[in-house]
Length: 171
Image (cartoon, rainbow, N blue to C red; front, top):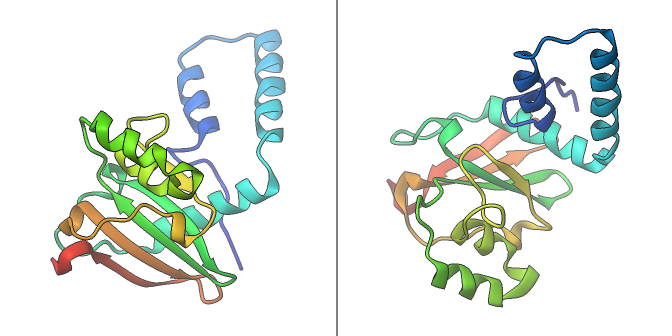
């Protein structure tokens, strides 16, 4: 499976680099920066790097349905549905999440990780533009309706194609 590499707007290293471009640096500062960035990169596992590449591939390939918001507005939750398929839900995070809903979601423990990501404020919940991988498709955030505030994505890893991208509620 061919993947393109590089930093995206949601990559922590890209965020650091964009902030640092405004600061003047001499050789000692640049050397220190390189050492720090290498240290940060070393802390991401091969699995995390592969997941990031897959998410980038999906996001480049997906055509959001009519009525959808721009991709950057969505929090994006991913999980392997099988060895050759990724399921995802893209959702518009609530600007003012309910503490009651969050507390109820957290009462379900780690099996309820998707609902915590959906119903809680960051850092437990996802924010606009953020990606997160979940243990399996059963732990992804779940909603029964919601139109294009929630989009289900299915991606075939073998063929590198989006199988479906549809809004909830059939709209």
